Image 1 (cartoon, one colour):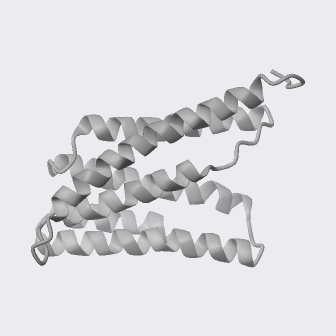
Image 2 (cartoon, helix red, strand yellow):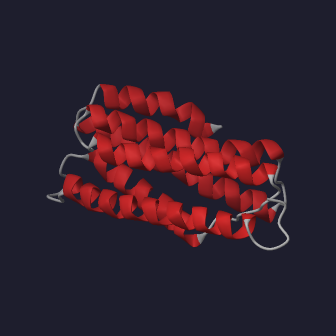
Image 3 (cartoon, rainbow, N blue to C red):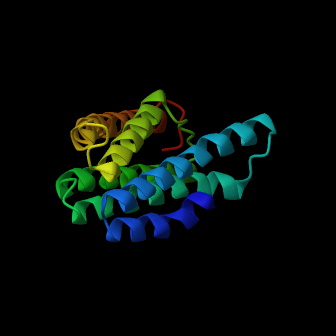
Length: 175
C-alpha cells in the first residue's frame, strides 16, 4: 500500500520539477521500490502470502512505474514511444496472465522479468534525478538504462508469450 500512497507525492514533486524536488521524488521512488523487496522477503519468510497481496503487489509496481514514466514524458526526459512500448508490454502481460488464469495455466515470473524491473527502476531513478550531481552525468546514465530497460521489456514480454503458448498448446492441455 505504501507504493500506491506515495505515487501522488512523486507526481506532485515532478510537477514542480527542479533539482531539489527531483531529488526528493527519486528518493521516494527508491524507498517505495525497496518496500517491494522487503514486502516480498517478509511474505516468503513468514509464509504470509494472501490473495490481496498477490493482486496488489504487481499492481503497485505497475502504478508506480507507469506514473513516473508518464510524468517523465511531460518533462521531456523520456520519449513517449519508449513509454508506450513499456506500458503496452505491461498491459499485454497482465491480460495474458488473466487468460492463463482462466485456463489454469501457471507461468511463473522469470529472471528476465526481474532484470526488466530492475533496469526500469534504475532508469527511472536516474531520469527522475535528471540534473548532474557531483559532475556525474545522471541524465545520460538514465538514458542508457532506459535503452537497456526497453530491450529487457521486449525480450521478457516475448519470452512470457512463448512460455504461455507452449503451455497452452502442449498435448493434453484444455485449449
